[in-house]
Length: 532
Image (cartoon, rainbow, N blue to C red; front, side, top):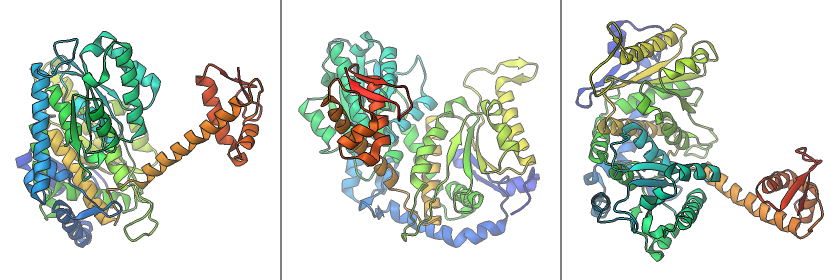
């Protein structure tokens, strides 16, 4: 490792990965690496290149579920390993185009309006984060073909807020996209039921306003078919949620907004092509993975702070949280060893971060590295000087350079990704860059990047708590007029060791059911619950 400092020009240029065909640059000169670090990593990186090539050719890359991992085929169907896969992908692209044309032209319209003008996306995780990021990065308020809203949680107050923004009359011209590959995701199911209720109360049949994006034959697919929804758009088991933005999950919402979906796909495909280069220094994703490996000692010892100096990329850090942390946060490696791998991701935006947490980044605990994202083009219109010789964009660039230098002065690692502008093509490139880096890094540390057992464990635990709630509520209602402690109810249902959980569940019921009362305050031992 070299001493961290402001690099000399020759150091700066020697640690650049420049891809002129992409108008893209990755600067690793402030990571503190030396050439020997990359040389030492070369054999492992060759293995990572081989693993990526096998994945793209159709190898089973998710052995836990016996699944292929095919999100790279979405932007280059010709690379799919067989004709059936190619036909599936191309067929969905054609279906997206047909649906979009019909909705924009009014060929598909709501029963009580001439056109759909609002779009309500109901999903969670990758089924919402991808469309949210695309909307934030590329949306054009006032110029998009449809206004976009999201149900991305099972918070009833949050859904009420969204419905309030749409307005009761607005539902008349609102199209709902319900997105769930399995069709069994409870948060999405709840959002769909809440939407059905809201549409019904406004005098509309939800089926006349709904499209499903889901797996063929899933519970949602069967429900949409039985209720005669407008359309059902398929998702396939070789596409994971966190890498689904280039599938119908991201493309149909973007197309309905009127965004350039072909630009997204072509940008991702171009980055994919660049990151097949087996020269580590010329491969942006491989070099990015090497930076992660070096900064974290291959063990996740440091967090990644993502700082885009562009408002349109504000949600990129949130998008990357799922992509990176769900992919790399694993207890076991591929050999069954306990490794507790992962890279924590958080971020803000420049120059907002300078008024938020750069103080700690510069002078606090050194447990991070920064991924700056620089966008060269300030705006599409004429430049405007806020003072003689300086625009708002000049200030933004100055703050970016100043923050980077201030961190280097204190020996804090950073890398910088530079793109020319925020466009469909560059957004596609950025998504593909980090997808490929995740794949390379996972091979370097010998983990499976394509499953998520921890997420499934959380879902199962939630189901257990809901079952316990039903038991506790039934016991309480079976003793009308009597006040009971949580410990007493826990004993009645045969779960005395779960009194804490019973207390928390009964407290929630008392706050949300008009006929259940809590007395004795918030102290768990003193609280009593009864049915009025």
